[in-house]
Length: 172
Image (tube, rainbow, N blue to C red):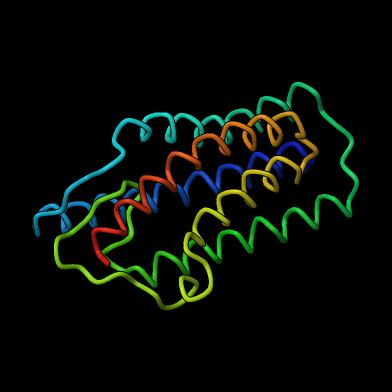
């Protein structure tokens, strides 16, 4: 099987993981709204969805169009980082439980979660996003996609973290 096909399978697997996240997110959003939850930061959410979709599509287009040489040490190192970012993401999801969401929803009276990865980092899920956004394209040397996503994601995360910090202040 060609490297491009293996990479396509990896991106498809990450895409399926994103679908699973969205299913969890929708269920948790319904739970939150049923308890009076209020959403903040709605304006940046469509950009976030487009950017994350663009990461997957851009990596595939770049790999198939450029067919870059892939140093095995780069591929394996980046694959390990992709796996680590997925593990961190699902640790965040498990730790937050019903409070985890792809949106920023504040449930009145909910306690701020300070366990798991949140014991050491205020926004560990975003560390997972940053690492994955850089590492996934680089598994197959799609450096243009990695660079573009990383820059655009930096702008998005600046807004997103401000929104989440404001939301978390409501729980304090």
